Image 1: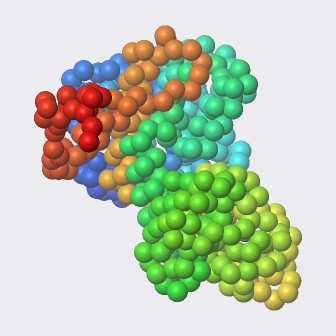
Image 2: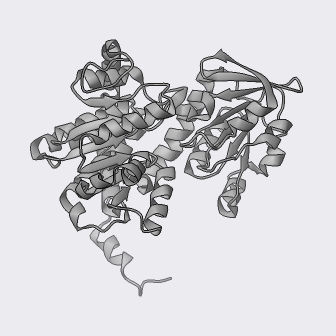
Image 3: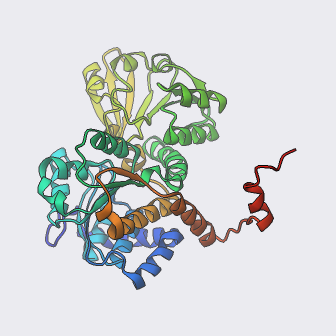
Length: 421
């Protein structure tokens, strides 16, 4: 472990390799690049200190350098023990950033790194899963008085923060970046769908065509995953607890059933729910020999590893991020990435092109908090529809895409309630 500077990373010698990855991501994030060029001139985050807790990937590095270009001082940790790209963390350290993250952290190391970022006494926070925000609220409450506001990247974190706000426990305002249409309708669907398949294939090299692929949860992430698994030739089964997304899955052409029934059919299982104990002991008991189980939700509690270990008599890693559990009845079940986010633990996370919009939203939300946050109450706020549209326009423009505009007559028609048949 390298700790010779204001950083804690696995190996600073990996910096050159990380820099090449960051260069690749930077070239494919044109919306964020446009915002960065403007920020260099205007410095909207001048004087602010940002503590970030978000997957340390090449795309995150581009966000960090954009926040710094806008004038902010940065300290950063990873938001998942198995999602940090060590070469990218090394590059950030070599560039002088305060970064505390490495792949394969234990629970203590994970929270120690978050605590290191809070030594900055932040004025703004950026979170993915709300672990940093909760750490402030539970262990460092005195810091909250100096924090103007924060942002949250993912569905699980937003749910957590809304529960805190409803209970009257939230100490500063947070913008739910995840709930922006230019985030969840692109990052969650297209990003999660593609990167989860990528993680499964890297850990298994299994053929998806002809397999029965069980997706637990048909929210935005589950929908993206189900669609792409079907595109690879899999027979997709969806499990749900909510009748509305379950009906959507049926109308989209997927089989929908209870997990108890799906467990007997599936070759590959992937949870995308944000809920604990989605796959438990009785499901493992029903699974086929050779079944593959993984998770693409934020926390590792969706698959009960405790139950799997209890039902097995031996476990061995047969390839990176692929553990074979020998069951007492002779079957073998495979768990990928220890139940952590398979798209980040086994692969590289979402493609740069889709993270461009998510991280542009993060940047704009932090700039909004820097200028207006002191007037907000301690609640969870949405991205404005204007920001969503402006960012969509920026992304289209930077991608060379043009769209039509309404004429004056068409605009009048929209408000003319007398116009009819």
